[in-house]
Image (cartoon, rainbow, N blue to C red):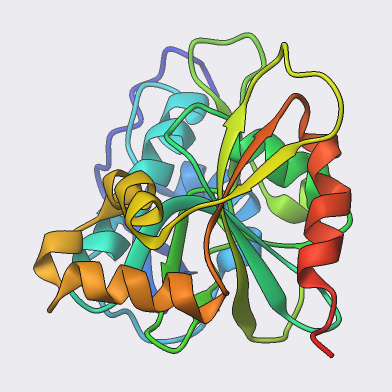
Length: 254
């Protein structure tokens, strides 16, 4: 396929249905985009009936199509769940044996995907973009492709399984809520600080979607913070440094 070919959706059909934290989003594309879309989204595919309108895959080349498709699917799913789930800009990684899950909250472009790639070989990858959490602490999976910088002006979209990331069929249960801050100059082990509830809400609320649409939104955040015994701020240098911390936090409760 020529990189200069216009791949806008003329004569498109639904080529895939993907599951994003319980929302089934159809992806509509032309036949020549079917295989790239299926390959990138293979870990999120479902046979369930759609629950939203289709998202169109279009662009000037395959790379840009996949680059723009990922946020389009995410946005469609977030819009569908507005006011129902707490949705945080976060990575979510689970113990593959127990399902206990750590949610790593951070702003876009500050380390969530890198942490997911690094830690997802040990812990099960649930998402690197939006952690959607029910009132009782279930972390809904969204095994979207990961956006990897490879020197191009668009990020390459790679399926979690293609990167060797683990999966689990267990229900993810929130066990740790971390606000992560990468500091390349930080030395030694990560610095972990337990946040007061007010400070935790102040740190987490800006990294949420549709929070004001919820009934008593700050109470909902406080409930989740209390559910895990408090949120922590973590300063670290490299994602691999977080592995012992997550292992300890996700160890089965006595």
